[in-house]
Image (tube, rainbow, N blue to C red; front, side):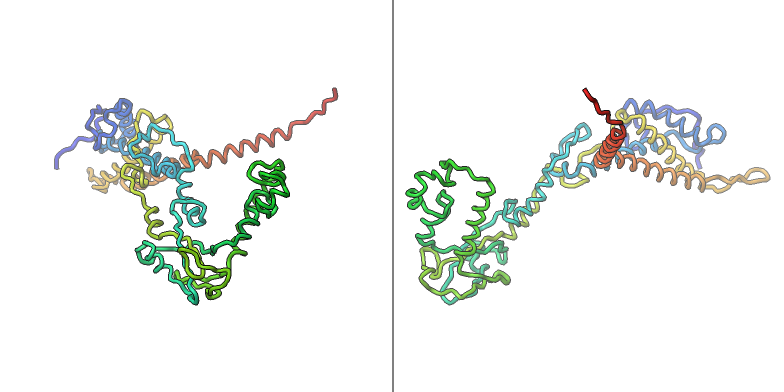
Length: 400
């Protein structure tokens, strides 16, 4: 086997000496590379013992330590800000950006609840008439939807069923819609309350202003009135088959009008399952779609402060200690005249692994303690402590 030289006591870094060259052109990295070699070898016992490593081994460990530090830092930043980052342009230089949290993605997530409740959202509700026919109690809404152009099988999901029938003149002229608030229509109220809503609670011409809770109660009353008093039917739904109670029949109230059945119409509002599914998946070729797509790059070594560099030096030492342990493990003992020397391979590897785990745990703990949640908790505690301290200050009563 060739006689490969080991650590000679000094080194001289040149770009290209590291495996990946991530930081070779960073002046601060070049400046620290040889200092790290001296630090590591002296911590391992040089010059009292020989160190079976070359400078390029230590450079590789140094590069790895910087990369691990950056990975841990950026993983923490992704966890902290991913709700804001998801959907952002993937071309941003995120290392140079300050990420301000916003409710955008939370609102996007909550739109599904608005769609289900019928108060908005990202999936529209469709409306379809169900013509009621004399003596027919069951109505297949899937078949009816197909007749109305919704051809995909079993695609509708019924959200609301209600009844609307032709309203008699008495309901048109004698109700609370006209702007007077007393259930009297315009023709009657004009002679009683004055013209244009004067004396009433109308369209802005009235001189008497009622509390807003009154208007809200009136709106609820009107909607409940239409739901209860103007509906002649109840229903039940099974597998998009609408069963109407009682069985529709012609009478003086349910008159046939154009576009309806001979017993009037019921109406259904529904969503299309295909539209709901399509809204769940949005193509975004140039957007951040997953944590692995957040465009963090390797850190700039020159931007890492002394706290971070200290961690990197210690992690480099742990890597080199593990590397040296594996090198020395090639031969457990070395024969010398009249004796054998036992190498410390097992001790080096065990110590290196413990140190690496401890360093990673301390770094992650530090990042967690500086998270937005922890900082806000600490500020709240500080505020409470200040208030407790102020409560101990005597309150002097001043008599002037």
